[in-house]
Image: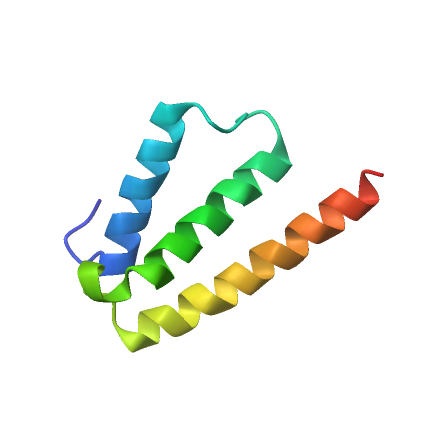
Length: 80
């Protein structure tokens, strides 16, 4: 990581590290990777104050969350 990383960027990488170490997600499936992103975005939003995430970052995280949810829905519908 570079020295100008945002709080949300830093903590998101830590969340992903924990997700990978827990082996709860099948990294071979694109839907599981999207689920990891959704979980990370939700956790960052939920813990905004603890992680010292700015309101501007929350706006971006919320937009990303909605994007990932739509992408997951499209993949699940397309996979039926």
